Length: 222
Image 1 (tube, helix red, strand yellow):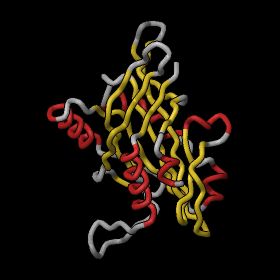
Image 2 (cartoon, helix red, strand yellow):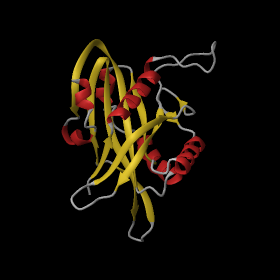
Image 3 (cartoon, helix red, strand yellow):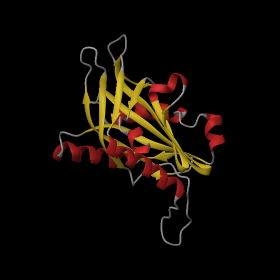
Image 4 (cartoon, helix red, strand yellow):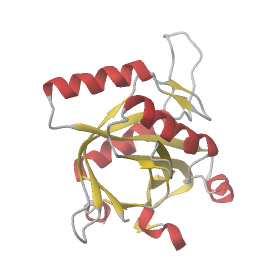
């Protein structure tokens, strides 16, 4: 079964700028404290879901993104505060019932392009693959499908532009890559989904066949 996530145009700046801020700028707990850069960050995708209809795939449409400022951030991992996420979800359900929690995003920061290419840094880590189904079950088990976006960022030695393009090979429909100024950025999509096993028991599984669609991305960076 095909599954798509559509990221609306005004959501994309939030994804990029959140990753850029955590990567490039110093973060301190207080004015005279130790500063850190090249951090991961974490946020939530909000919007609505459309079930499969005929030949049309099931779709998640993200109309908004929020950043988890309470997340514990590190250069190699990020740990969101689940109580904070659940509180936000309940708040939205009460006052904006037309908006659902439809997914998550987090960043992968790398020192340089060589490192990203060597380890395919735009892809999910083993920890990501374990975390997403666990997160889905704990935070939003009533949602049949959640999208998960990785925003990978690194610096370039020279300023330049490269038009947004699809990833290569069998990842083509799953993400994008682009260069802007002295940065290179990747967007890669994944999902977690509620399934039922042979005993009719509910499971939540990691899915790697979500097609990422950002219709306006190329228009913005041409």
